[in-house]
Image (cartoon, rainbow, N blue to C red):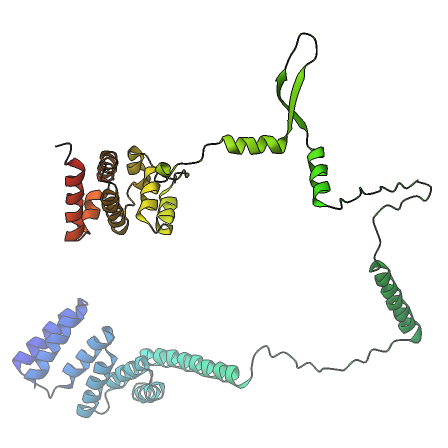
Length: 372
């Protein structure tokens, strides 16, 4: 007979099971089993609670324990059959349900469970059979097509017509390739005139006279009289050109140092290209002088490079050494002031070494020595 503690725990488990509090019921049934493990009703009730929670493995284990304690328990076979059906073990489930039906042939619950098990077994058999059909026989297999060779047979008339057509097309192509002149033909009735070329002079003297005779005669002056006997002096264009060349003053040696007239550069690219093409400091100085000092900041803008500024400073130094006149110093001072107004002049000076900085200070001292 169960102990008092186990009986009280069982009663609490039954109350929780009726209230659908299955976890609490399992706890009370477990407490009763710990108090008395010889009573099979504790395991049977806990198996029922496990089935309600879907814990089929735990329910199967408790039912097996019940059958160990009571081998002919109908509920134990029935509940273990339910658990095994839920686990997919249909054969063992059917064996447990058949044993339960043999022990209780009038139990409707067992009969209904057998019917549900039979339906599930049929569904699985159909599924396995359909899978076998899908694997064994392929679906929608298209019939194989057999290729039959076809020989094209043409009659003689068609081949003859094709040959004639090819010959005609070749003839047309040949006609199209013939060159045709587009120049108008002269009529035979039109009279033709033959121009006789002038006779070539035999000597250089004859050639010069013929050339001078073809030039217009210019009136250079004369004497006008009231009697009408005027004296007119004429000369040819060659004599006028020679007199013009004689009257034109030739440059004196004092003007050889003047800068050559050249077109000032309008862009920094043109200036740089012209600057690099010049070899002498005089040529570079003449190039700079084509640019007004006020236009230097606008020409360089923010594109002044340290290498170009270094070359300009050396050119200023060479010019002052060659011509230390006051005009040259004033021009160099104006261009130095113009270069200092370029936007990136201060930044460019940061990339100059100590000698270039000292050269800039030296140039400032030279051009400002007279003005100080």
